[in-house]
Length: 412
Ligand SMILES: Nc1nc2c(ncn2[C@@H]2O[C@H](COP(=O)(O)OP(=O)(O)OP(=O)(O)O)[C@@H](O)[C@H]2O)c(=O)[nH]1
Ligand SMILES: [Mg+2]
Image 1 (cartoon, rainbow, N blue to C red):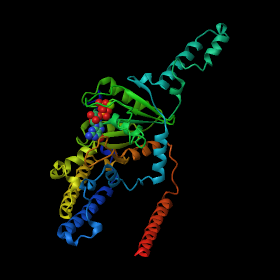
Image 2 (image 1 turned 90 degrees about the vertical axis):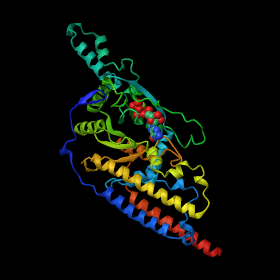
Image 3 (image 1 turned 45 degrees about the vertical axis):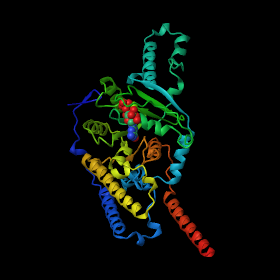
Image 4 (image 1 turned 30 degrees about the vertical axis):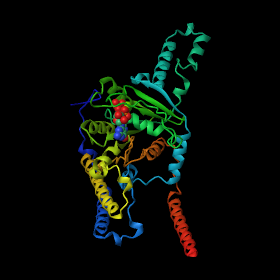
């Protein structure tokens, strides 16, 4: 038996859940490896004189490091098309213009506003039904039809679709909430963006289920972590919510990229599958993995961004590309070993960093996660023109390139 946030679950990942063979990741990695190897071989065997100007690596080699967004693209299953640019920009507009409100924080499932309301209403109806018919008065009738909400703010009772962020203590749930809720565009110049959820180095910091209302369109739930420092009562509020939450549309399970899948993660995934709730996976702290695999020489060099000689640039580029391959291999084997790509439910995979470093200069991954949240809540219109939109975009880019070329030709 395993203790998950204090809740004992005996379930093991069952073979019956298995398995849909997906070759997409293997294929992508091997094809990428081949092209990377070819390119690297080509670059290292060339003398710097032979390099075409367009192939000269940038001075700042850190720009060549694989990013969380590129990892999301790389590990995207062919079954799930990439959202179109229009869908992404509409999603950002919705989030960036929405008002966010921490509606409630609770440690008992029975206290969740609509659950509490339902219970109190039922209790009242039962009490009134017990009044002897000859004793019933106008007062009783008005009581029965009363719109009173027992002191619960009526806006908390508004039925809205909900998504839940779930994961080990310290995995980065509250940090992700902040990535999702902060308007990064607006705060670009601001030194300190308003953060909505409390984040701490201390594992087990979030003790309650915290409900954020997003523009009165949906709710995002931050939850207490399971595993180390998770507590019994916290485990109960989450499992009750998963099994009974009527408005729950999707669970996002966060996996610490540094620690990989832990036993508790696999138990909770099995539990969620058994409950028939759909879920996706978000790898957090991707910045740490990117930094970890980067060549020591480049990490320690303060001047990595000032490399001038083409020879050094080529050397750095080759080193970084090797590191990129290691990062892909690292995640590939993590995903492979967890068997996630073989589950019939085939969870989507997202890569996120809430912190930045030399190689990842901005938070990434949150835009697609925002989109996925909206989609799971039924708040995204299917982009039926998506294919033709992409084709049109490509055609337009080709046309622009042609225009630029003819312009240059005209100039020389
Ligand atoms: N480098 C890095 N650190 C992160 C990232 N996300 C979270 N952290 C750090 O990890 C620690 C825990 O983050 P939280 O967001 O509080 O984690 P949590 O899952 O809410 O933790 P509990 O509330 O204790 O369950 C904090 O010190 C964060 O700064 C990330 O993407 N990169
Ligand atoms: Mg937290």
